[in-house]
Image (tube, rainbow, N blue to C red; front, top):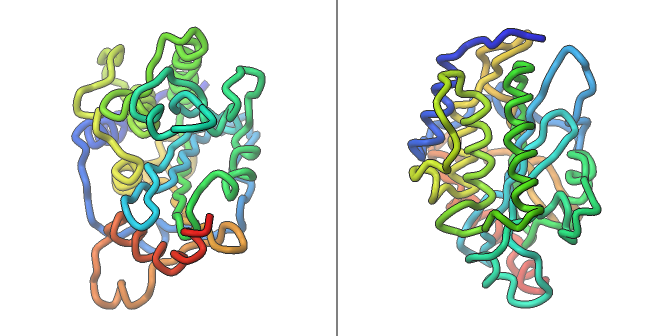
Length: 275
């Protein structure tokens, strides 16, 4: 078993998540990675534990979606969503019994999908055309990985027993992922039994901003370095790597995900409206 390392970095992440910090610093070229979709994101190295967060960025226009988040340790994946219904899904998304979303789309507790299975299905789950997906990967200690697994095991137990609710102003996909990370990476011994009030209005885009700027490897050869980040866009032919336009870099335009996402979607608006 590895020993816990870089407690200050873990506390920095927890503090950033809890403060809903919204930074506009652009990622460096080495921070934003490129690779073939979906890539081998799950690893089986017994000497390494990797956390992967996938985030469908949220935006309001055009054809807006609320977005979604999920998290994995190695190839084991979890997420938190509203009750799945055939009609009037937006109403259930306001307040309903909680259940898995991409992990178990039928919510019958007969599926337990792996990270790679979820990623392979993402192009059919994200909408409309033009949507952007962020994938964040970070290596953590054994203790931190085990703490995150325990957090989600308890969450799934509550959901299966219908003791947990999904509320836009309470527990939802983004703040549950953020809460689980803060819980796992905080070595201070602080209690995490209740969702912090500061996390209640966390959105997928704000979670992306926080992890982009504050999440660092806490184990492995790149300890202390920023987590790996890849950005993908849903186009007519599936998910493709998204690169920041060079003109944005030249003009010093800050990284504003909601505005950026709206602009990117405008390119596909005719297709999106037809979906």
